[in-house]
Every structure is written in structure tokens, then in C-alpha cells.
Image (cartoon, rainbow, N blue to C red; front, side):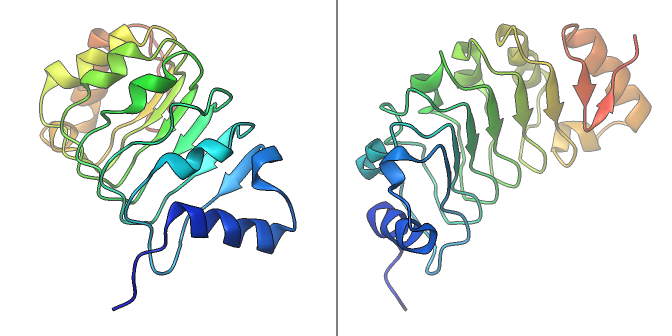
Length: 182
């Protein structure tokens, strides 16, 4: 079995493939690494200019090493092994989109700190309780979420879930790709 790809190696591979210095790039894709990345770390700090960072389709289980990414607007961590979004709070002032579909996430408490989050892709996780979904009200700029494939949503018929979500999240404009008509 090969050792996992490190963040440092993934960045070096990206630079070689794109013939560009990662420290100056605004859109960096470190997704689909082989062998997969297992850990985020402080080597991400070199990506200070990055506005969109994709680490999807790896084997990451914790959000760390992103506190210096002050320009980051979009973080893509879909298809990993995240059980929580703890660690995202360090991007509370800047992050506008968080993509964490196809993980193992049950609790959403850190979302409460997100001051500028507009889009939250959370489909196919393990959210089971309305209380977790209602936390999204504290991310006051949030307009769009994907939530299909979570146990909470699967428990209800689509129309009932949509209606109840609109009632509980009055500022939401789009759910699972469809506009919410009130």
C-alpha cells in the first residue's frame, strides 16, 4: 500500500501540471489525488491568494490548516470522510460557499459562526435532527442549500420536507437546486 499524498506533494504536483506558482493562484484543485490525501495541514498556508480550493474525493477526516487562507471564498471538501465541520470557523469572515456533500457529517454547530456563507452543499450526509438544520438560521446570508440524501430529509415526503424547511429557514431561497416559492 502506498503512503497517502501529502498536501505539500499535492501542491507541488499541481504546480508542475499547471506550470504556475500555487502561492499566486486563485483557483486550486487538489481533488482526486492518488494515493488520496488523508490529512489537511499547515502546508495549505502557502495558498494565501487562493479564492477557490478543492480537496474533494480524497480521504480527509478533519478540517485543519486553513486559518491563513484569508481570501478563500469557496471550499470544496465533498466526498471525503468528514464527520464534522469543526475547523471551518477560522473562515467565518470570508467563506461564501462550503461544499461538503457525501461525507459523514451529523452536527452543524460551526455553521453558526459563518457570517458570509451563501451556499452550503450538504447532501448525502448523516444529519438526522431538525435542530441541526435550524442552526443554518444563524448563517444569516445563507440563500442556498442542498440537503437531499440526509436521514432527516429521507424521513419525510418531498413536499412535506420542503414546506417544513421553508417554515424553519425563512431566509432560504433555494433548496436542493429548486427555488423556494413562498
